[in-house]
Length: 457
Image 1 (cartoon, rainbow, N blue to C red):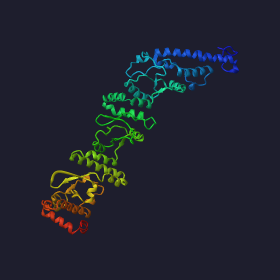
Image 2: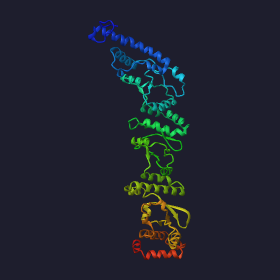
Image 3: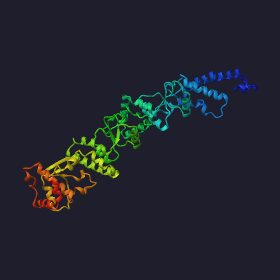
Image 4: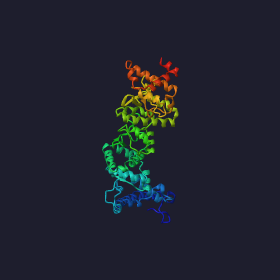
């Protein structure tokens, strides 16, 4: 190398020697030493695998007070490395590899264009890399952080580094064959299924794009099936998550649309923020679920409606201002239920609007042991009267339907009128089972409720 006047120090700046000497020294550093060192590293990495990374030069940005030679070699090394076709990158080995295999690399190293570089945190890498290996993707390298830093800054040309990112993994899992393989592998360990799903979705949702999950069949459903994520605004089917045991009971009618318990709230929140086809249960959803329950047995429907009205009570307690909106959403649906007097084991379902109109022979079943014997006899003897179960009725203001108040008594008289209208030539059948004390109750109610008579005529 060209030296300064002391015959010891290489010329590094024009003021310390002739320009020709500086150019000569730079040529030796860039075109002589650096290529030879790259060739040396290729053999070193082939023999020692990841242990060879410790012999790589420090990236220029990490050098502290470097001299001209060190800075020149480091800068040139990383530029040439980012363009080199040498096989410098050992593949990440499976977790079951032995320590001996880690020390002596036996698999072929990869070139920079063949490598998927893993820049993830240790925790994420331990989960994502084995997942990809299960899918047959083994061309992954996990260099130390300093190496990744040097490569990332140097690879600014037309061919940037291929990095292991959420977007990359998502594109892999949009392949139906690979996604099915992942599902099958996870089903073998059912206890870890939801944990694995939470980890994977949390990772994929780091992608800032709104459509980061569209096309991925990673939505698990009760029964073991899987659905594909799509935008809620365009999806024909919405899938539900339950937050409480009560919600689970209500949503079980939506067979094939319920996500199993265990999906973390943070994941659900992010899915909702991304506009995916998944929802938490809200009371406006009850209307669509009512259509599904109508094909079930009467006993199942009644039990389901009892849960719905308990859910209504909780929703109104939480948000009293939405009560009217909730009731409006189901006013035309058969969400009231009760037996019919004189028809053993019968259940009749009716809508709030039909009940409110007074056109049906229906009242809310008093079902109160403290009622006088005459009143009890009346309710139990009016054949055809529908006794709506209190547990399938909005109970926020139950007193309005009590037969002890004028509005409830009015409802009773209207119900009797509806019975007579439905069977104009069979009034004897309507009253045939009412004992004397029951008839006396009817007469008493009529004589002491002038408003009732006015309403009836």
